[in-house]
Length: 157
Image (cartoon, rainbow, N blue to C red; front, side, top):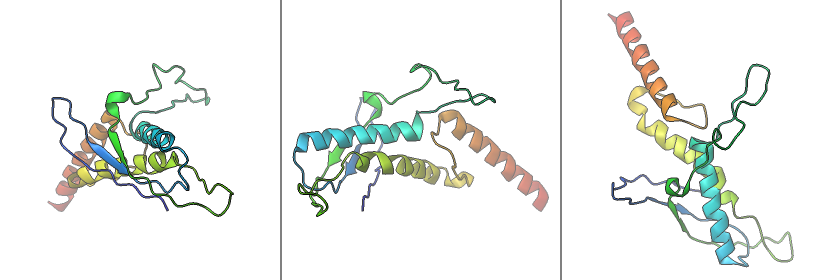
């Protein structure tokens, strides 16, 4: 079973960075440095899934996102340093006891980030159902929530 928690922190304007703990169950670790790289890259990919990587299509299903200028990816300043706690749990399904490791960062990161944003938006009663989530989507959801709240107030009055 893979689990991940995303901590929230106030990041100082001087360039401080939050840490994200990841503890992969990656089987027998043959090369710890490669496992760390896979996990750090996986977290970057998960952040991209949650906040950046969007493919746009027109009404004829033709891609409108055609270049890396349009298809955003997280940069080095967008990805926190990952605290990796390696736990060996060799599998009996192959002679080396190895398993994958990179997914430990990728798979839970988007869900954890979106859940944290949704939690922060609780006062607006917002449920997020899209990914990636961009700033303009958040502003739009808050505006709709305020309109809905005003309409409900009028109905009660």
